Length: 118
Image 1 (tube, rainbow, N blue to C red):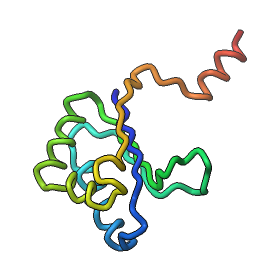
Image 2 (tube, rainbow, N blue to C red; image 1 turned 180 degrees about the vertical axis):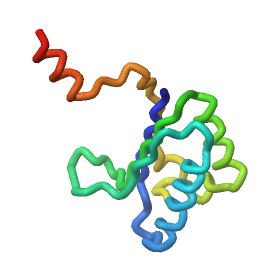
Image 3 (tube, rainbow, N blue to C red; image 1 turned 120 degrees about the vertical axis):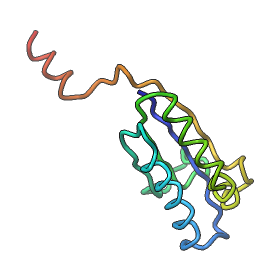
């Protein structure tokens, strides 16, 4: 499984309505992609000196890299990627994206159960 993590530095100059519209398109593209497992995202909850200017975050879990690539191609095809870039501080420089292999994800309840069984 692949977890696609994206941090965004949304410009204060962009209206909340426009931000919601662009991020809504991004979410709709994700949820329409074959091979998606989960989507979550939104505005950060509190200001933090560790925020480094990032205001929003989203993660998408895909069954594999192929599904992730289909999603990214869709963002290019309908130009959502450019609309996203347009609302960022510094354009593409306001976006940080990375992918993690979460095939061996560990869940807290499983860890506790293993510990209790020892």
